[in-house]
Length: 366
Ligand SMILES: *Cc1c(COP(=O)(O)O)cnc(C)c1O
Image 1 (cartoon, rainbow, N blue to C red):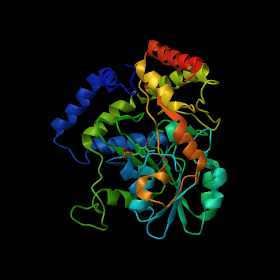
Image 2 (image 1 turned 180 degrees about the horizontal axis):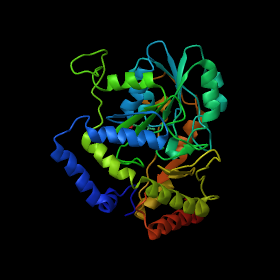
Image 3 (image 1 turned 45 degrees about the vertical axis):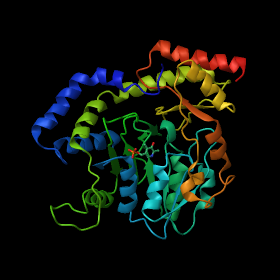
C-alpha cells in the first residue's frame, strides 16, 4: 500500500532525538509555556526573518487570533478564497465578520488577484490568501490592493511552511502569517500545534494576551481571550522536526518534479509560478474522470484523496448564501482534482509505481 503519509517511517528516522527531547520536557516539570515553546518561537522567528512569533494550539486558532488581534469583527468584511480547508472561512465567521470570496486561478488554485479589486468595499478590513498545497499566492498584487484599501493581509500559510515568494518566506510576507503543525503538514507535530507570526509588535502583544485568557500577568485579565497555548511537548517535538524539515521538503520537491515530468500532458499537473518555491504539501492533479482514475489507483494499492471536494461557498452551513455558479473555477477544480502520495518517505520504487499506474489508466482510458 502506498499511502498519502507514512508517520511510522518518519518517526523511525527521528526516534532517538525525539525520545531525548520529549523526555527532557517530561522530566523538567515545566509543561505550560515553558522554555521549549519560547525556543521554538525564537527559532521560527529567526528562520522566517520576522520579529514576532507566537506558539498557539493549532492553525485554526492562529487564524482566529490574527483576526481578533487585528480587531476585526462585526460589520467588517474579510476576503478569502473559496478553495481551501474550512478553517480559513470558519475563523472569519467566528469573529463575526462577513466572508467575501474571490475565485481562484485555474492553474495554481490560489486566490486570483485579478478578481480581487472587484470584491473590495469600504468594509474590507482584511484579505486572507491561502498558500494552497504549498505554493504562495501571488502576493504582490494582493498586498498592493490591500494597502490601497488600508486592509490587512493575513497569510494562511498552514500548508506552506518552507515555501517562499520572491525570496521572502511564506508567512512573513503579509501583516500576519498563520501556520498549522497538524501531523500531516510539512512540519508536523505529534498532535495539534500552530504558530502566528507578525511584523507588528502591537498585534503580537494583543495576540499573546488573547492566547492566554487575555492575560500576560497571572490573574490579571485585560481581554476575554481563549486558552490556545502551544503545548510544551509539541514545541520540543517541533524543534526536532525543524532539523529535518528542509531535507524532507527537498525530497517532496524531487518526487514532485519526477511526477510532473512523467504525467504532464496526461493530467493537469501542478503549475509552479516563477515567483517562488512550491513545497508540495500536496501533489494534486486534475482529471475530468477523477473517480475512475482514483478507483483504479485504489485497486493498485495507491491511496489518493480529494482536497477539497466541496468549495467553501457551497458548504451546507452557508445555506443559500451563495449558489452553484458563483465561483465557477473553484467548483470545476473541486470536481476534478485529487492528490497522490508525495511524502518524503516514498522510495524510488513507490514513485515509479505511482507513475506507472497513472500512465496505465490514462492509456487504457479511465
Ligand atoms: C491545516 C489547515 C488549517 C487548520 O490548521 P489546524 O492546525 O488543523 O487547526 C487552516 N488552513 C489551511 C489551509 C490548512 O491546511
